[in-house]
Image (cartoon, rainbow, N blue to C red):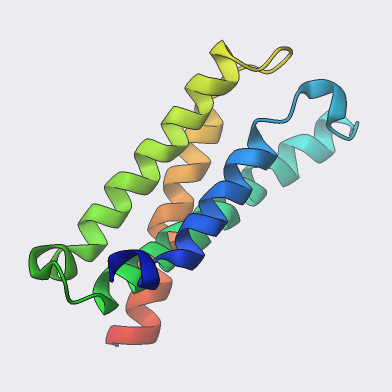
Length: 124
């Protein structure tokens, strides 16, 4: 049952993985200022949605009660670790790509935004 409620999370994680692991030659060329202002925002939005979907999926499943009650903390941890793993993969596997600390910070801020949006919609 956990996969049923987290199907959108898994699909969105696959989209994030595919788009962030593209080689640099297939990335559109933008100026440094466009990249500086848009890149962090894009990372934050992608990971806000990932964390939000994961929290919703985990809190709706009933197979694992501990997972259901700790869905916010577990989703934050998994989403943050996923962002760090992507940066490590970009550095070590994808030619022409590098890991950036600011991307990890943007991903983490996005996860926090996802938690805030979840709490705003479902709890408050």
